[in-house]
Length: 222
Length: 248
Image (cartoon, rainbow over all chains, first blue to last red; front, side, top):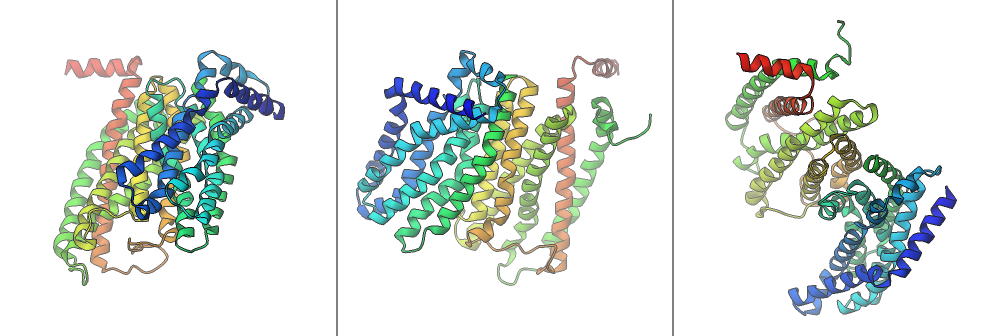
């Protein structure tokens, strides 16, 4: 089980490293989408500071959802997904490795880029720290839930849009508490409650979602 | 043939039974909602603080209850259908979804009608309103997923998985009032505490709830009958039924 996890994770990372521009697309989407908001809302620093946490979080959410669609699609198209599911090890390891791989390739760069966006939105230092901490706890949840959505919509015609429709409602608690942590810091309160709830959500999704994703993969490929 | 717990899980038996039950449910729904609405609009006293506006709760509260309950019912039957390969349970789950979505929409709509004169806004981003909206999205996601998959077996199973995952959201709706303490008034009806409202109001609300139950049964049975006929169209009993229908 552990061997399957590591070999799939290494393989996914190597594949991402060989398609560098493609792997960076979610990051570019994240930055471009977030940069559009000041143009639409107006350049007043007060307004920008207020909408910044929500904008950064929503853009991170959309970047994760748009990129996760291809998580299983390539392996499904060339038949290697069936072979992986035939392996004696549990498909839970496969689902976990895929989600971790997605987080390392898309989630982590988003977290690194978030402070830069925060500066564009005139966030203070402590608010930037809260944003990064919230994204650190929250983006793995998005990758895990996105993996479930990708497994459920495998091979469907309207897969990409459908995935967003079914995963976004499930991801709203992460959005609320992640953006809430930054708002709490900005209004002078402690963000620790938001971190605790995000951490609880992360533990819950990390324990439950790989099981559900494995079941979804079996349903979608049988 | 003895009557067991599983007798009506056979599609032809279910079809025959539900054919008898649907008119009864409709009759019950019409009678109960007539009495419930009459009590709500004419018998129940005017609210001391909210005036006549509050009377929307006789539709709003039962609709909100039904919207949450039907999601659990849908998830339950979908899970039964998935776990035990019970075809009829999966068909019932799919038949419940549109009715649940309709009640969710009704709860949101009547809530907006009540919120405008009371709060001065059609919509506020309060915890319960937001959770109800998310519940509507969950219903739409379920319906969209099962409709997008052509193979009925895969559609049932994938829908069951999504419904069970989404059911985690229903308790969050219930506890959201405690989590984010915001604008929406707390629940006035609970089993543990004595009701804080006049007994005629409570009676009217319960009558409306039973009316909605009867309506939900009638509509879900009708929809399930259609799904049964569609999926069993190759079966002998459906062909006999069709022959009998066309002869008469």
